[in-house]
Length: 281
Image (tube, rainbow, N blue to C red; front, side, top):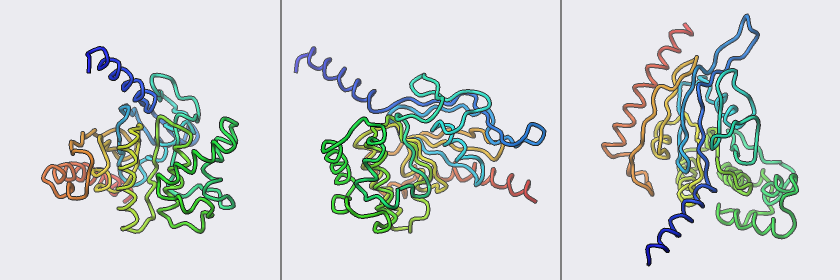
């Protein structure tokens, strides 16, 4: 291949990556709730980057404000101080470039799997008709639900519902996926299968992913970057770069490197949990 063709291919690759994912940043973000004279500061001076095309996992003590952080990233709420940006542009509200998969299923119970996936684009009037249905069916096949397109949510297992929600998010072509403990409540086997499936999907599309979890092993298994939060008022304790090769498998969690990451994260989280326990007493 000539050097000019190589350069052209490299430029196209970079362009596709840019279109597929976005750089997200929180700069000096603080958030409190309640009246001025009796407010509770939840987040305090949070500054953290979520690199484009990488999977960043957030962990922290129970009740530290992880869901508040998700709401700010999604644009559902605004910070009291500081700013959230996507590719340098200020986040002022929800937008199609950021899709959220929540802890609890948000599928519409009276719609089929196919209708749930196509609902958003139809409501916005951006896509419609057979082409939209074909795109949705292709996505559902990709997430292993090709035979369940006409089933209703109650006819799907918990893991299937999560996969349907992933398809519903992906059809909107976001550059950022925000996952708020999406596998919480699944049994151990379903959860491990969803983790493996989610990684396959991530490694295929390389969208920017921000994944919140309370499970350390899940965090290490998934993450490129592990953000560890403190107790309230919440700050960023540290960011650990998880240097495990991709594609990943569960055997990697038994490696010395994974054990080191786990110990580092657990030591920090245990210290913060003890602070919370002391305050509650």
